[in-house]
Length: 53
Image 1 (cartoon, helix red, strand yellow):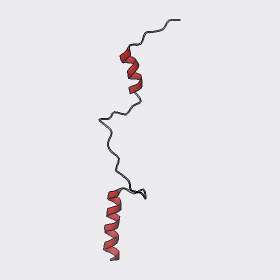
Image 2: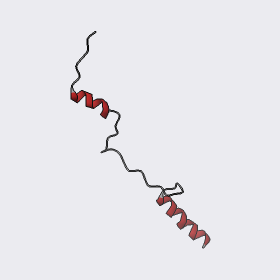
Image 3: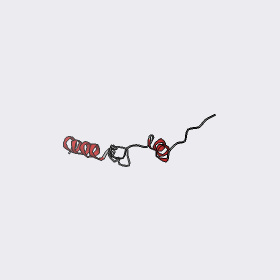
Image 4: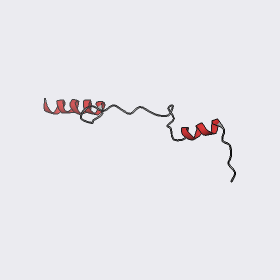
């Protein structure tokens, strides 16, 4: 039974394969307490005001 010696560099790459690339991750729009994106909620309120006030 022979085992291959793994370099430290190769060993650390095993952990990085599953980690997301921080440069390519985009921020998710924040949602308010009712679960709607803030921009969508503001648009909804603006349209509601136009129709009902």
